[in-house]
Image (cartoon, rainbow, N blue to C red; front, side):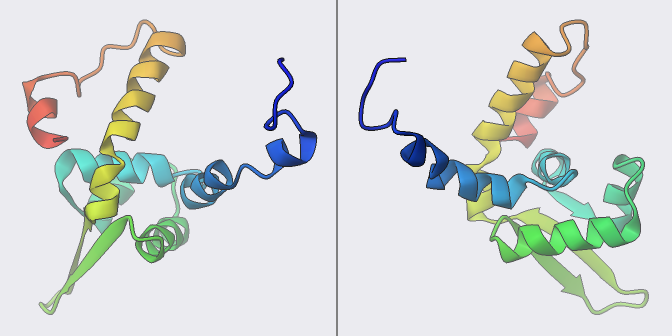
Length: 129
């Protein structure tokens, strides 16, 4: 690697933007949560539980709260009986959609070359824009 001001070991260790991003999306389920909310525009807690096979209710609650605290998700509580809670992307979350789409494309190309993506369709184009 060529020597430059960024090749110093201490500078590399302090890549603040990537560290911050990792702290926001670093949870095991956060990328999938963001993907499903981005694709379907609005997701209820139970819908996410069904889509995220293997997640516990407490983990989903924790990761949704963290994404909300970090400004990626909006939680809307409807005062009905039974109560209804819906999650949607905030403006910040919407700005992350191109990153999610790039990650999906990369993963299909390099990790899952035989995968037939049901999200590559006209429906996907309408949903994730």
